[in-house]
Length: 241
Ligand SMILES: O=P(O)(O)OC[C@H]1O[C@](O)(CO)[C@@H](O)[C@@H]1O
Image 1 (tube, rainbow, N blue to C red):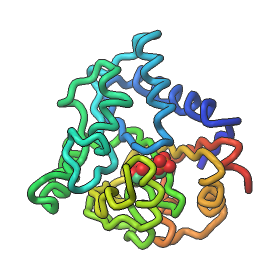
Image 2 (image 1 turned 90 degrees about the vertical axis):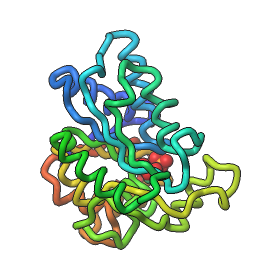
Image 3 (image 1 turned 180 degrees about the vertical axis):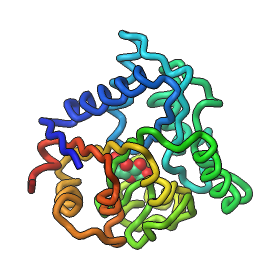
């Protein structure tokens, strides 16, 4: 595992953005695994600015997102479909048919999980997966206790995850209780993983990740089984390291 230390969120975002742009330029038809939440917003902003200034093209690539809330339609402003359009897709040269996000409003959610897993296979797997980490160590929406063998599945969100994410909603009651997420085994099949960690709130999770045991009680620890993980963290997140 490689650790890149950065001063702050902006620097972390630029470091990650440069790595992604390099990959896309050397392999324009790659499949990029994307994440939502506050952490990757700066990276997406870097990609948008680079696209405008240097013309990096996304016309041939494909993307798969990690997760989506159950019960929110794609148009819902709190859905991850909406997040991705607002924060990246609407600002680069990518078509909707190149981008994939689990459908949290599907009639048959179990079938949706099977479809999504199959889709990733048909795309040839994820070349580079961008990840954030939850304060409880979740990756995607794989909460503590999720088997490392898990594939795309339906999860009940941990209360602390709902509380953490309630900042995007009007109230905690509005935060969905369930989500669809790529499983840990699905994530580990990515050829390369970029884990971004920013802010003091994530410092304990980062300490546990770097120095703790590999355990299903701390989902991110599964990444230690992967051969090609780069962690990019900022000074606040690195407080204990
Ligand atoms: O970046 P944030 O908002 O702290 O969220 C942490 C993680 O939780 C999730 O939002 C759950 O999907 C991840 O996508 C994200 O990486």
